[in-house]
Length: 97
Picture 1: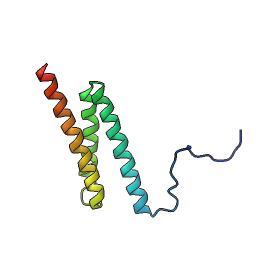
Picture 2: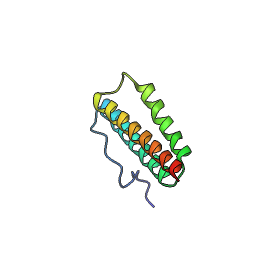
Picture 3: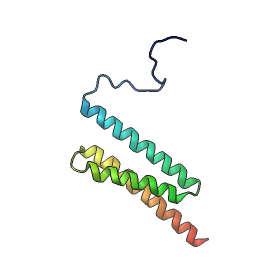
């Protein structure tokens, strides 16, 4: 075993980015990761757990309001809308059964 520092094989190299670009990349990555987790929970019929993730994304949106670029705001808002509609659609299916 070597003492060399090794990064994860799929870790992107962010060293050439400005601090603002790194922050944006972090926000994008976190939002997309949370979206995938919420989608998985909805598919596993765990809407309450998915709502917890939606609440977290909503909190992120509120805490960062006015500090995001237009692109970041659209991404976060779009993910929230998509997940909220998926919860509503899932609730409608349950009521029809």
